[in-house]
Length: 322
Image 1 (tube, rainbow, N blue to C red):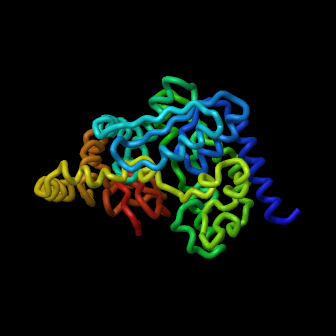
Image 2: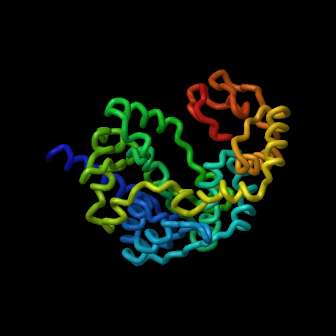
Image 3: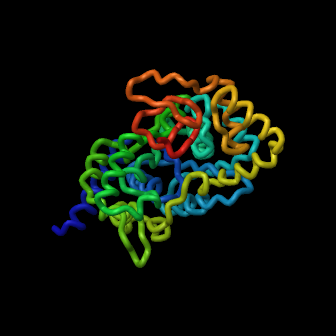
């Protein structure tokens, strides 16, 4: 068997078996490659409910693709349209559970929280697509790396990867299953050469190429070859920087930005960052300057302790770290 055939078969088998081992009957469905594969496989053996969260009034391409996938596989599908009020009500809960005020993390995690909250009313557990982008090189910033550099970068990412769905699910009493993080899938991904993860197809460079090839005969073509869309862009929360820009005056932002820099040593980048930090500060207080472990260091942007080899701060989103 040629190398490509071998690895396509290996990836397909490992993911199929991981989904079969996951006994939950729900899935958070974005309509992207990763979660669509989960729906396609799980719907073969169980009655499945899929949940998609999207911001009302914002461009939300996930809704179209999720509906397409749910209809293709005959899955009961719930689309949750949330407004700004719903988002703001969820922010303190998300910040409190995750202990972060990084705008990207909050923007991405609130829709997950809203989806999990609704799912908790209907199913005992849900699957998520966590880990597929890290294991199979889904992020566009990886595409320009040489094979050796890509391999090193991926392994570094594997050591640091962290997902909000597990703690958020625990806070809501709903089980979160992550089939791509099943030990067999992780082991499989570690064996797949980097050149089969990022590859040219019809003149376009694709991440997760091997995962796409493994399931191209299972999913609709427009889903298999859908461009990777970050959660915030897929569900519409990418409009929030503009929303917060209109809710907080320039004068208030300038005053508070200076105040928190002087008092807490926290450097706030924009008005959305300020809004989340004030919630974080009320729950946890300032991040603090004391490094408590010998392998830690202080983030220069918020003084929170981060691992010594970290390149960004998960607490505030600060990047790059020295």
